[in-house]
Image 1 (tube, rainbow, N blue to C red):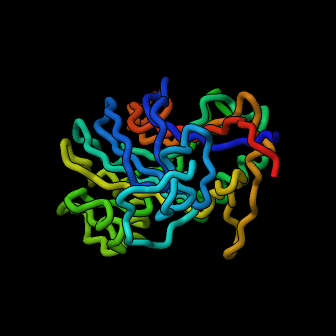
Image 2 (image 1 turned 30 degrees about the vertical axis):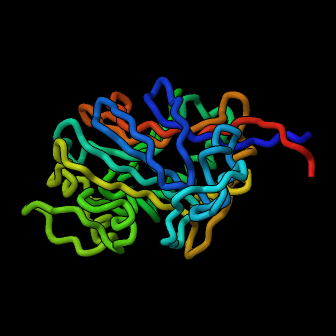
Length: 288
């Protein structure tokens, strides 16, 4: 028997993420929080998954069998190209939230400064700010390190949830309804560029009881086949990969994907909405 680190994906509150999220099925898991109601689906290319995923998750989207070999019922025949990681969220706010106060990003429940070289963290953050999102806010050296960007410019696609999730995904552009203060933003690129100005984000509100789709796509994370790498953007189209397993241990073994509202311009004191936990768990499997 050999031991591998397998990925376990669960959702819940900040204190307890105890609901396992099916991967690559499109079947959402719903949670209610102080910020509202969230329904989340996760897609990962070449997902092996821990034992808790065997009966509910697929190796790839549109496969005909679950990881445990049982057949999938009523599988969609509409296929599309997927990134390495996709997180799809449907969100219904409990109250109006200004666009400058709603963030999406990562938090780690333990300090990473003793395990990850400071130069690697600072260089990676600097490159992400240069090439991807200049509005990123972070504290990489605290007891609970975090990195966040505004939801308005961090998500790959945004829309009002007045259509099916499949139709939202199929549409090449956003489907948000902009108010009179925001100019028409015809493309995803225009929306992300416009809201990289924090003052612009103050012109938009996520409205109480209205349904929104939020989709995050990335190829910078490679999580397939129990191999875990982060690709950090460099100059041109180049990237360099960092193997996560180099730094993982009994304490540093999980990270949260979080939607959060800042309070008094502080993310440290923010209000948690969605908390989606990715954890590496050790499991034995037969040698080939």
